[in-house]
Image (cartoon, rainbow over all chains, first blue to last red; front, side, top):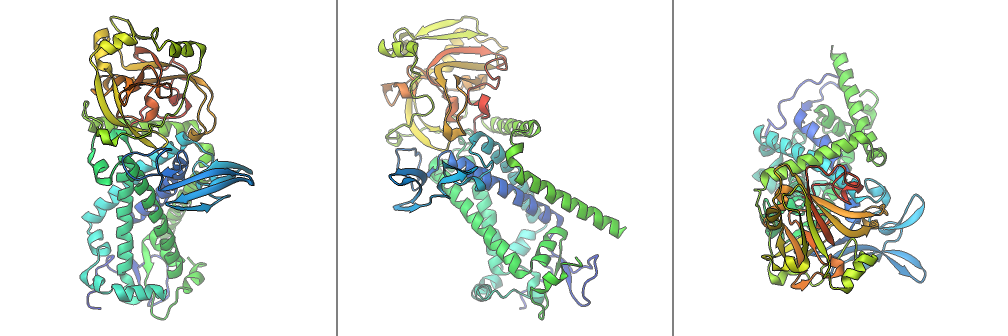
Length: 299
Length: 264
């Protein structure tokens, strides 16, 4: 693997605490990356929760310039009264699903209520559009500034160019990287010093998705439309923007699930520690990820 | 030194995650906390300041084609004020309806619908963006509010235009539980009042406004959300403060937690 950039993530450094002799510790995540990462986690948590509460105020999605109750929805969540009681019904395109208990008709404080997403997923848990909007815009601004800080830092230090953007060698390694991922085989030694190509794609995707969240979110704002109307044309209208906002949020949730699963598969102690302290232990050939649990006590 | 440093960092870490965890676990109860409410108020101010700075004062809301008009323009909020006085106006086709312009003006006015129809009219096809998330496109016809205000002569000290409406709204579950009933009112900034697309509208899609859409007069302030578009307007008052009106936040929904600046 001659293509490996030895300078990825900076030179190896001694880490304050004692480690097994011969193990290599690298300084993987800069302070800016670590801080923006965890602020981003908090933002996304609040934006998703409050976003689902906002969605509940009108639990229908459309495509195009406009859309309201009498227009055809591409997705809708609702409660339907039938002879045998009320049911939650979720419609996606031409399909309908009974989602009683979760979507459309679910319990809050022990009582069934007509609501799109259930109370345990929304912020606040009770249905209140005004409160949800307050949380949403607070964290939307934090997300924006946090994201800009990350991007400016990443461009200035060349972190994005060096560690995130795939090289030609990376692109050639896509098939083998896919096979490694399917086998849950995690890189060791030199290869573990840099992100593999699928990781790079995943991180680029999530950066694009967050940017798309900001753009589609702003496109729903009539004040922003009077400043910059072009995103309305580009996205196909306010209702298309709202639908894309929802879809890209869904993809971010998908990313989070895969990302967290990978952290646990690759060794949660070493991975989480590296995002807290910056220092990452390079897994050796003979070490499995299970060793990380054993280290938990002396960490 | 290294140990002390490590401890401090660890303490900071625990404190940071503890605070974040507290925030997530208690989002419900701190939603109404006065300090948190001030933070939210600051966010609203910030959004307003940024959008105002980026909008040129006459920056237009997008306008659409006839073919874009929604087949059904959803009516929301009050669908019929249904008071004896209002029903009498409906029965007489609003012949006796008066729109008063008062407060910080040189010439207070009282206009009939016929008076308003004689003024220069403007039509525009715009989208109506509800705070709930839906959108409808319609063609509005009316008199530019700036024209009325110029005729009345606005005092330089006036900062807001307050609209009082004939409907007593009892709230909408979709906007968060059953709100307390109250007379609908709204307020906008002077700049928005003189914006070329701000109308006192009397027709939707070429027909006189029907009752669900705000007959006989409603506001169109196109760079803000639907709840600013007050229906059933009876009076326009120029003022330097709305803090002594109703709940003091500048509108029916504002008194119930919604932003006064509804640009997003």
